Length: 335
Ligand SMILES: NC(=O)c1ccc[n+]([C@@H]2O[C@H](COP(=O)([O-])OP(=O)(O)OC[C@H]3O[C@@H](n4cnc5c(N)ncnc54)[C@H](O)[C@@H]3O)[C@@H](O)[C@H]2O)c1
Ligand SMILES: O=P(O)(O)OC[C@H](O)CO
Image (cartoon, rainbow, N blue to C red):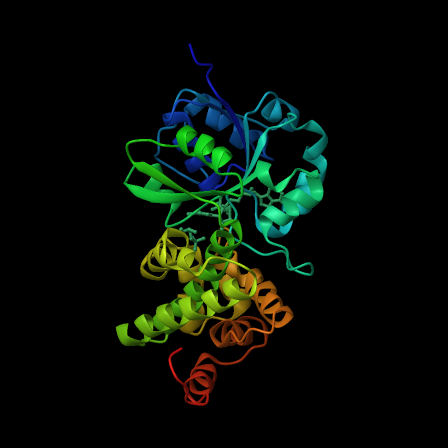
């Protein structure tokens, strides 16, 4: 008889909880770690996460704790789902508690400010785990839809295909269909940069621009993501897959996307501070647009849409001025 797999999920926000549900539905015993006792108690007593997934009934084989050692104990998979810019500090505290040989799984779609490291690189740096033990889950996976058990495909990326296959089996359910990929660099870049393009499309929507603008931003956004990926050794085919185009389309079309919504509010004329004030959850692109631009400059890659987003979000460039500048760039061949 095969043993029931154990998973620890660090982060009781929307995606940590929803992916915990996926693992539980696939047969794992899941423990969520969260900072707040009131929320952990609510998860255990009401079988709901009222703060992040109100109205969603959580599976019986999923519980929550505020004790990181209890969550980490014996976990076959240690899943990390906190905001990207907080990962290093949190993981440094959790690292001594982790089960030896646990597979470390990043759900995060960001790039660290300052170091310009991808999340799997931060995980390897902090835990000293080999890259073969670090995996990434990414793709068009809006948490609210997954929590409603609406169908989605996903990507489980790991340099070691066998580890990716183990995780794939551990999270495969009738509504969640994960594909494996060994291109970790491409998969992570796809997830991080789509948030920046999601902001750009949201800004365009907020300004009242049309679907031609949206199609143009998505396509040219994918082109600049692919350029960066190629410079960093990614497989260009990854960007036409779920981690690239798939996630870009979901994010840029959905009102459920926090990045898209954040951009829409900016495009409608709200200030950055006003937009931050009405945003209750993590919109990774707001910080990661700067680290993605940093990566682009380190690799000598031109990323005009990312640069435009940084200008609007962090340098106070009015969206209409930014639009004119983007459209006035020198004419060139598509490739
Ligand atoms: N929500 C989605 O649809 C979705 C889907 C795929 C990937 N992601 C990615 O997953 C990651 C997590 O996103 P989310 O949607 O769960 O975010 P969220 O805002 O819903 O939840 C974030 C969680 O982290 C906690 N947190 C915040 N600051 C913290 C800190 N300093 N230390 C420890 N914990 C802290 C919050 O309390 C909360 O539990 C992000 O990188 C996001 O891009 C999200
Ligand atoms: O809500 P967002 O913008 O963080 O997007 C959520 C997911 O990444 C979509 O795949």
